[in-house]
Structures are given as structure tokens and as C-alpha cells.
Image (tube, rainbow, N blue to C red; front, side, top):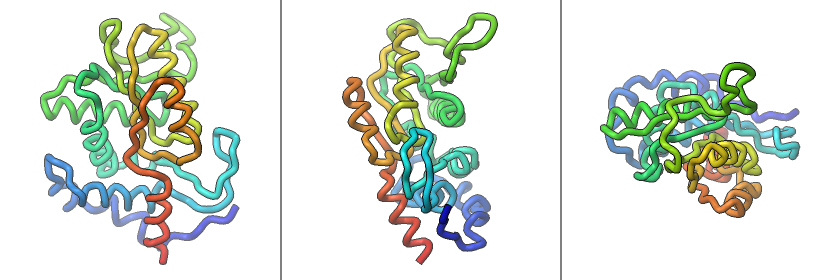
Length: 215
């Protein structure tokens, strides 16, 4: 596996930027988006030779967890996601493990802004005891609209599994919002399922930012 090396201090500075976090405006701006793009390029992206969970081979690897599990990264993502969630949605849902911090943070940011938006976690398999439920969290009334959140979309399979379980439970889903669209056919598959995909960033943007940082 060949991976482009990063500068030694790159893995520290963005997360130590307390001043940025303290001065983060209530309303997002272009600086907020640029900051998140940099965090993803530095902490979530690698270039080399990789076998993806979808079974595909790729020169690009994106693991958003170092960003979604950081304070600054999660604040930025949650605020950007919240701006994209349909105003009629009663909940946001995501498949475990990547979706856990996303739905929790968006629900919290929504509450801080005076909006009611609960979080649901979709299991990869039903609970092995008790109710054998696929879903965790405060369940909304039947036929409620739910927005699915995802970290990375490649083929769309993971997000569509979440949609399948939500629809089976009697909920409506119209949109999936992702941090990164890898541009490898996921958007087409999601559209085939009658859904709309929104993404904060395309893989091309992150790859380009990575190259700029590592010049």
C-alpha cells in the first residue's frame, strides 16, 4: 500500500484550533466550509491502493471518523447537515457505526436552535434480545418523514439499508445527506430507489484540497 505522507504537524493543529471553535458563528459561512474541507483532506483522506468495503478497488480512501469524532469537525458537520434537513422531517437516522455521531450531533444542534429533531440509529442486524428491534431512539409516529445521514457514499448500499429498515417500520424517507459522495455510482443507485442525495463535498474536492496541502 502506497500512501502519500502528510506533514508531521498536520494531524495536530486543526484539532487544537480552539480560537476557531470559540469564534464559530451561529450562521455558517464560506470560512466554515473551507475549514471542514481542510479537516477532511488532512484527517479523512488517503491516496494509495485500497480495497473498499464495497469490494471495489480504489486509489482513494476516505474514513470520516477522525473528523466526525472530533469536536470541531462534528460541530461543523452538524451545522451544515442541519441546514440541509427537510423542515418537515421529524427525525434524522443513520446506520451504525458511522451514522451514530452524525445523528446525535444534528439532533443536539437542532435542539439548541429551537427545532425538534430526534435521532435514530439503525442497526446492521436486529437486536438479539428483547424487542429484536432494528431501530434505536425515540420512535416518531407512523408515516413520519425521516432524513437519513451518511458519512461516505460509494455504491449507496449502506444508506439504502437504513432506508429499507425505516420504510419497513412505517416511515417515509425522501433524502439521504452525506458528508462525501465518492462519485462512484452511489448517487445513481439512490436515485433509482426514488431518493435524493445531497452531499457536503465531492471526492474530487477533497482530493484536490489534499494535493494543495501536500505541495
